[in-house]
Structure formats: structure tokens, C-alpha cells
Image (cartoon, rainbow, N blue to C red; front, top):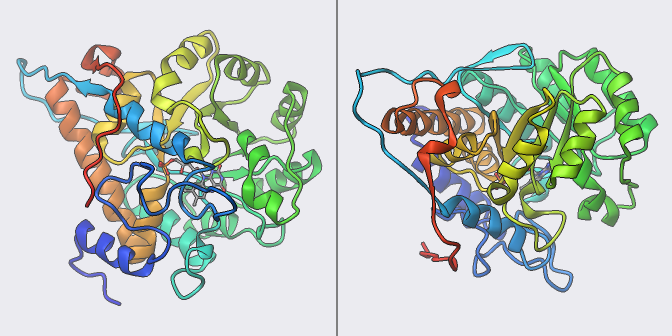
Length: 364
Ligand SMILES: Cc1cc2nc3c(=O)[nH]c(=O)nc-3n(C[C@H](O)[C@H](O)[C@H](O)COP(=O)(O)O)c2cc1C
């Protein structure tokens, strides 16, 4: 199917058609209890929703909605600079595709194969001037890793995240990543709660600080720990020598009832400030306005999960490119209106906190 002249709206309409039974491609993907994908109750499959009641997924969205952006308008005109340097690469924006795997389970190969999904994500990100992170799931192995293959094929770097498998398995993945042009590697330590890995009898483990240190020293690549949701874990990960941490609740997919990431980001930023670890965040980010909020709370860059799935399913790499460009455009507009010339000028001064409130969902 041709992708020429497509708008992001067209991409999402196509995704809605293809993802029937999994995702309704709502205007606001907010994980509210009434949403089609939500609530993995009583044996209902996880799909693209959240664990258990789905509250962790919803809380990500609510946490961002509690923040308002303040305009600051009087100064000489400027064009905001969104460029960002990450693992030795100069990116057009502080926004990357999140490590996501297992998308072939949303309707099977007639919707998208795992290889097509990984290739579309890597290529679309590269075309927009950024990079993709790639995930890991029960169908992946050292010999069958569509994410590593896509990064190698894209020839422009990317980040490969491995589930908290045995130390030996992770180190073998890291070694393979070194040979395949990957920019950084890491572990989603919250993957020890992975529903899909357990369901398919693949062992995942909690990791100690010594385990993380062993992983850091096992490779020449920068190592990332993803899935940090408390100050203590941030300090332990930084102490183990990681290059970056991602404040993330896995899009609400590993534990019910966690806070939204934007609710706990600042306390983790504060705890990690004494180290030189790079701090990233994800969860519920749908626009450049959301990106700016996360950066104002202290994240250096962000990852986007579900919207990239929809973009790739809707129109392959072209969909991903359009999605990334939309995020960059809205971030640029938000920086212009809040008086931030470059990423280094973004601070907590530009956000206003509202009182927590019940979700106000407009169904579409
Ligand atoms: C379908 C799906 C699969 C995912 N697979 C992985 C994975 O393999 N590894 C990982 O680190 N995170 C995985 N995640 C979590 C994302 O990396 C990211 O943390 C989350 O999607 C961000 O929230 P958002 O979807 O609201 O943007 C997955 C998320 C989704 C929705």
C-alpha cells in the first residue's frame, strides 16, 4: 500500500483498522479503565494495555495531565534548538522509540511481523534524525533477535535492551551487540515481572548491584538500566557504573498500582544528581508538550512506546518518521512558547502543578 502523501491522521486510521481487537487508537491513549485495551483482570491477556487493573498505565497519563506549561513570551525572537547528544550520536531531538517487542502478537503476521516492526521503527527514527531502542521477549534468542538485526541493517546505531535473563545470556547478547553497531545496551530490570516471559516459561530474575556491575564491566558499550521507579534503585544503579537509567514503569505492564513516572521523576533526578548518570524517562508521552514536561522535571530525554507501535503498524517506517516529526514539531512549539532556546534552558520554572484530580476522560 502506498504511503505517499500520508498524514499522521491517515496513519492512525490505518492502524485502527489493522489493530481491531487490540487497540482502538483513541485520540488520547490514556489507559483509563473504560478503554478497550485496559484491565488485565482474571486471565484476560495483557495485549497492549496495562497489568492488572491497568492503574499504572493510566497513572502515567494522569501524572502528566497534572502539569501545566507556563508561557514566557517577551524576548528577541529565536528558533528553538532541539538537538541532543546521546551515546556519542547527535540526534535531532531528545526523543527515541522505546524498547518494545512482541508486536507480532497483535493480530499476527498479517498485521506486521516482528522483523517488519523492528525495521520500520529503526528506519523511521533514523529518517527523523533520531534512533530506536529495541526490546526483548520470549520469542527472541541470541540467534533470533529482530531488534539487533534491524539496528545492524539501519547502520546508524540504536539501543538494545535485554530482559533480565541469566547473567551469561545477557552478556552473550551484549557481546553480539558490540559486533552489530549498537550504540548502547541495557537491561529492563523491571522485566523480572514480565507476564509474557513467565507465561512462556522463560526465566527472568531480580538483579543485584553486583550483577549490574558485572554487566557494566562485561562490555565496551555504555550500559543502561531501564525500569527505575525509586530513588534508592537510581543510586544503586549509578553506583554500579551504568551510563544511563530510564525512569519507567514499563508503560504500566509489569506491576499494577504504581505511580505515574512524572509523579516520581523529580525525586529520582535529585537522588541521581551526585552521579553523572544520564537520566531518561517514559510513560504516557504522546506529544512534544508531554516531552517538555518530562524535560522540565529533569529528564534529559524520553522514550515513546505505544504511539510508535501504532505508527509502524499504520504505515511502516513512513508512519514512524511522521510520528517522530510530530513529536519534534510540538516540542519545538512548546519550547518557543515557554522561552527555551535549547534543551539546556529547560527548567522546572516552566511547569505549574495542579492538584491531583480524578481522570476526566473524553471518549472518542
Ligand atoms: C507492547 C509493548 C511491548 C513492550 N516491550 C518491552 C520490551 O521488550 N522491553 C522493554 O524494556 N520495555 C518494553 N515495553 C515498555 C516500553 O519500553 C516503554 O517503557 C513504555 O511503552 C512507555 O510507555 P508508553 O507506551 O505509554 O509510551 C513494552 C511496551 C509495550 C506497550
